[in-house]
Every structure is written in structure tokens, then in C-alpha cells.
Length: 162
Image 1 (cartoon, rainbow, N blue to C red):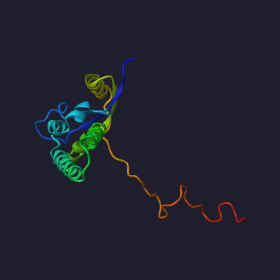
Image 2: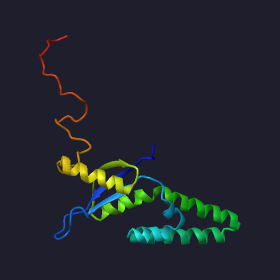
Image 3: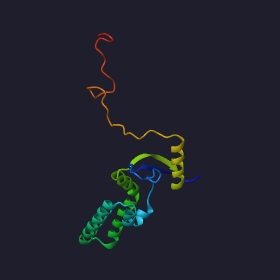
């Protein structure tokens, strides 16, 4: 059986002249080897300019701090490896956040063996049964003046006095 990966589907904000199918981004929920090996290149390729600048500043500060603190080169390399490993783990989450900052909205999740299969599955499902637009549900919606508790207060005298 093929390994399945979940992809989050992000829809671009509406702009005139943009094809709706081209405005869809599929982001896998997996470890990114490219972001692990070449984080700066991965950030630039995905147009994550602010994340790239933060990465450069963090790496420069880490390099200076580790060099002047007297750590041997093997420890400095291990810490650099750990930072790159964390970037590889969190790369897709950073990309989702970057898309959200650019106005994209998350429309759903597709599970497939690869990106092409995820795209086919998403567009076939959209053609078969169009869904209503995504509307976020508020975290807490109070229905009465007393927001604590799950049930409305009993009316006095409904069951008699006990």
C-alpha cells in the first residue's frame, strides 16, 4: 500500500483575471528535506521573505554567540544541525502561516499518495459536490447572558420547590 500524506488546500484571495484553479496551493504535512538541507533556498523559493530574514538573523546571532562562547566546532555544528532539523520539521507549518499572511484561506484537507493525486482528488470532489464557502465558527458563542454552563437556567416553579 502506498504511503499516504495529508495536504492542506489553500485558496487565494479573489483577484480579477486570476484562474480559480491556479490560485489553489497544496501544502503537504510532512518533513521537508529541502528545507532541512538548504533552508535559505527553500524560504526564497517559497517567497517567504520575512521568514528568510528572521532565519538569517537567528543564524548570525547563533554563530556569533557560539563562536565567542568558546564552544568547539563539533558542538557548533551539532547546534546548527539541530536548527536545520527543526526547520525541516516546521517548514510546511511556516509555509501555511506565510500563505495565511498573504490572504489565502484554508479550504480543506486531502489525503493522497502525492501532490498530483491530491490535486486530482480535490478538483474532482469540487466538481462533483460544490461545498458552501468556509465560514469560521467562533471559539465561544454565548447564547444567554450567563455564559458559564451548558444548559439554560431552569424556570422557577417548573418542577416545584424541593
